[in-house]
Length: 171
Image (tube, rainbow, N blue to C red):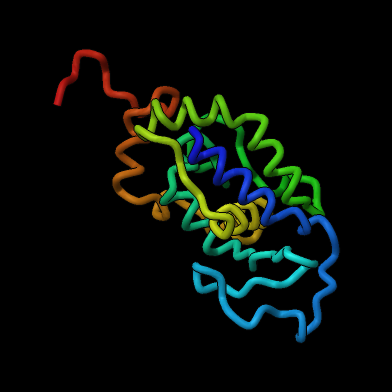
């Protein structure tokens, strides 16, 4: 759980300035990419804002396992749907991260139960997932074909997904 909390806190800290209009000019762009190869924008002394990419977020939402519990575009688990059409825009990524933080204890318990371990995210991955969750156009592209096979198998066995095996069936 310490790793999950650390990642969530670092992701939230990395996004602190996202609620403010970007004021960086070309000379304020960082000269080197972050560890993921994405350029970060300098937002203030000691603070950078990662580039938020909804397409990468769509892929991460499925591959990291968020889709096991959450649905987008009607695809995914029965927990809180994350459809952009119902979200207040403009979005504040810190409010999103704060909601995740408030639900962290329950989410970690469910992740351990459903996935075997908590989901770990870098700040960049969290930024991309937040961008996806708030991008109605990118969400329209999300379908069951985005879900990796190993995540599909977890979803089929997860309670509440409507795909549970009858209790008499054994593999």
